[in-house]
Length: 470
Image (tube, rainbow, N blue to C red; front, side):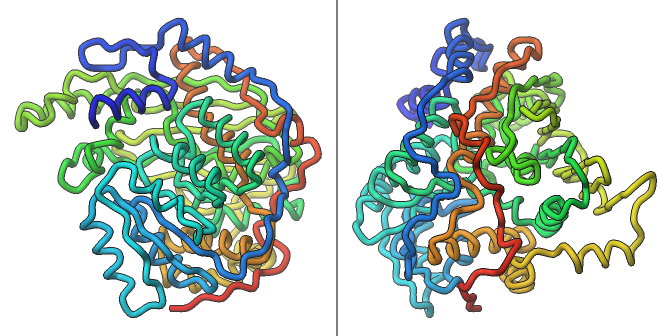
């Protein structure tokens, strides 16, 4: 990351005022803490309600994809198999990546133009007049600038998670989407995992009774990958994100719980508090690597986020949510996904299970639940999704659902308010950690519209019309 890119990143991430000590982020300045607090209490008038908004139908969805590193190539492959999609343009900073993905499309009907060689080649792509959707799979710091530019250029935007890295960016996404009436979807794939979809259907059917509590997490040992300079992330950008001490990746566990609780659509987050452990792994690992390879000297003196962050949220209707983040401890992968209500509960990890009392339902009872509560989206494209792939199929169902909504003029399952709300957990958790786990208000990005907005459907009633090719 160049000095200019670093300054831009610090500005966009709301950390421009953070002091530097010993090469690591030492903490927030008083002014920066005050700014986060002010942004959390921001009030505004909603110019247009994007929740439930159905944009005009698109017979063909002409797509441009930015970012062909870790996530982009898979998205190109999935989108190429969905009826009504035309992949018109591909963009990446590195030309060889673009060439490789274009070659992978040989034999299909997709003949995308290439954009590369410049840090801002993506702007030229967005300026095309033959795109409907810009699909963003870049490092996090670029998500909001690219999504905003795309919406300003008259395109819908779909961004990998998180959609924003600061409260200012969250508000920017909301205000731009409302003004342009262009969708801004955060590509939260875990909302389309099979068990999460089933529990959403169960919640809609009243199986759990009144929802009381939910838990989500991103517990994934990425220590070696984040420090892998050969096969990890370009310019170690994912490692650098771990200089921020809070829950820096909340949306995988949080998104499905928010949909089940009708957050932004009948309930709203009120305030949160957050606590981080000390860092017991990352700095020690960086120092060990630096002894063997001078490349890692730049990371050896850094202050890193704590191993485990736990963030607690209280909603306006009195529900509670726990969100955890740990990407360094030697633990099995888990997003927890726990739903607890007045009549029953469900939990995905360490083993999928449902309870109506003190014990778990047996195999036959679980099979009966699956038959009753499997939503239409799974019945229509679930098996195909498993074959095409993408985290077991949930990536494909997410992309298929997005395209089907755009082609049929349907509201999206994840709108700009979800993108902003789920992403804002990061800067708010940082503020709380820096203030000895003090509570902080969660902004209402809907400006009060959550009281009337309708719950998300996610094709629980009736499947879409879009076909799939292999």
